[in-house]
Image 1 (cartoon, rainbow, N blue to C red):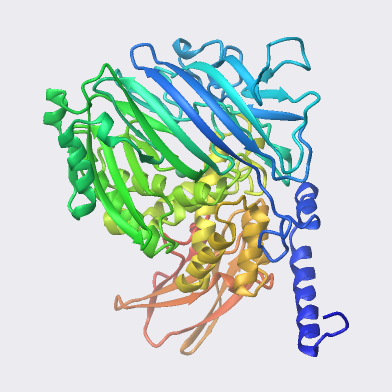
Image 2 (cartoon, rainbow, N blue to C red):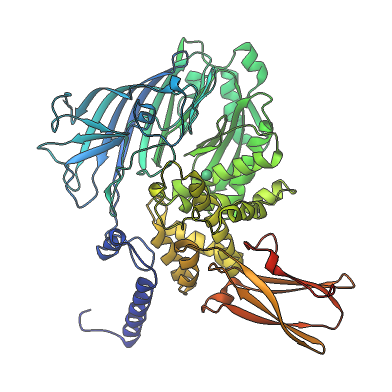
Length: 635
Ligand SMILES: [Zn+2]
């Protein structure tokens, strides 16, 4: 093909270079991130680059959990694949439960009873050779919640793999249910538990941020084969599909478990009667539950000897019939309806927003804790309010898409998943709890912080917030981005918005998109540079504030000015209330502000006497409401 350039192709090249230059220069991109675009691991059009790579692991874990002592003993084999172009001289693993290690930094106070001496690594083999705890450099080191394993004279070369084998013990916290833990004397949710490979990526190399409680996920996509042994009568729910129901349950439980796919009703796999009669698990002193999951970013499990279990299913695409369950203490809150809410949530995400089939084979909602997501496993309390049950269930399930299907680095960009889990279910939450207005609620919460010095723009990495900054975290991860995404959808309309989400997911599922991969994808799909929106809402200090003032009136016409006093653009909605109680609404999209103007004029017909003209409503954030009203008739 050399020397042959049809004119159409040349034009295309010129156009794409023009788009390239425009996108590249329109947003400030930090140096460490620019490097990835220059190296071709990411592209200026928002797609993964031709050189994109990511590492991954295969975990085989045998764990034994003793509910009477909270001790978990694990044997773990990890095969870690280095797909990067770099030679790795040290491996890093995360020991999340070292959060409770004496002397470690924590974002939340924990019960003194839960403080311990850290996860005990009893043995470590590298490619079959035991690594003894010896002197520095040749040994293994722990620093805060990280375990560093120097590979000494056998570094891990590009394209090579290494096999680690570890024996370890750890204590599951009893009194401090931080994202996991003990929910009652015999019910536990166990996440953040096994020694886990840290992420080595194209932006920062090893992710060595310690876990201090606030940070959530940033994990490789890996395969898990996990066997969990618990005493008799204890049931285990976990990430992945159960491989050996016939071995661990009594026949009638197996029969009900298998019947879930034959009916659209909720199947009560374990009833309160089964619990009372202790006729659930196989008649052994202990049972080993075996789960497998492929290409998932984490593995969590939960266990109880007295939870009931409801289940249903939903075929989200020809290849996937999802097993949907709720495991709970009989009578807890609205939990008898949680399997149904979970099914409706999965249907909503699969067909309406973002209209991408749910990616996993199962999803279990486990009763306890404050609401936390893991792949295929979420936990939540049993709130009295129906809308809270709907809100938390749909929110946690939404995390299946972000940060799990899309491997978001929540340690740096929590808004790239919490913001979506806030915004995507708005419509579903209102539909299932009609008195509940999640948009107005999120706006109210955002406005409590907007414009204060604690209102930190999203682009500041989440990890930079200290342990006193939880209110900034809440604002910058949930409320402000949730509203920004909502305003984006309002501006471009549902159809285009869904198209963007589908394309973004198509490009980045199973990978690690960063903020610019998202911004550039939206720009690319819309064919428009939205920097005028990204900059104030995602980069800028500031708040939304529109104001209304009368400019002039003559005869049957009045001219009003809408002033953009705040730095953040929002749509304009003007409601004219006439003295005969009729109304007229004039709306302008947020994009009316895109060229940087700070005021617009609107003409109002005065065919009838006007009582009041009002700007905005509960679905448009506006920090100062006092400047939104013109009392005409009261003059
Ligand atoms: Zn969340």
